[in-house]
Length: 106
Image (cartoon, rainbow, N blue to C red; front, side):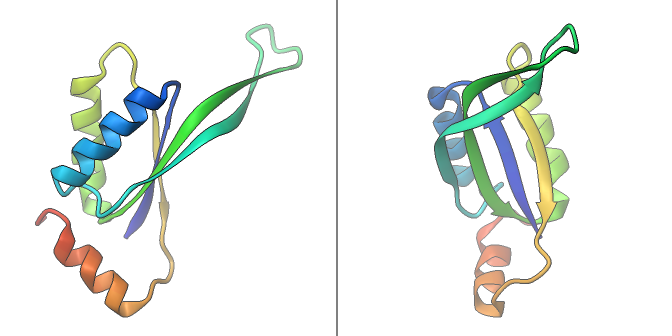
C-alpha cells in the first residue's frame, strides 16, 4: 500500500483529480491540503522561490500507481502535477482490508 501525493498549482485541478480518482476506485480516499508552501531552487541556481500549491493525498494499492500516473498524464498533458508515492509501512488491519476491497482490482 502507498500514500499517493499529487501536488497541484490550482485547487480546481486538485479537487478534480481527487474526485475522479475516488470515483474510479484508483484511490480509497482523498485528503486535500490547501496552501502548502513549496520551496524550489530558482532557475539561475541562486536562492529559492516559494509558491502556494495544493497537496492531495490518497491511500491506494501500490500496483495502481502506474495506472494513476497514466491517467493523469492523459488528462493533463500540458499541466501535469507532481506525482509520487510514499510506502505505508503499517496500517490497522481493518482499515487495510477496507482499502483493499474499496479500490480497483489489480
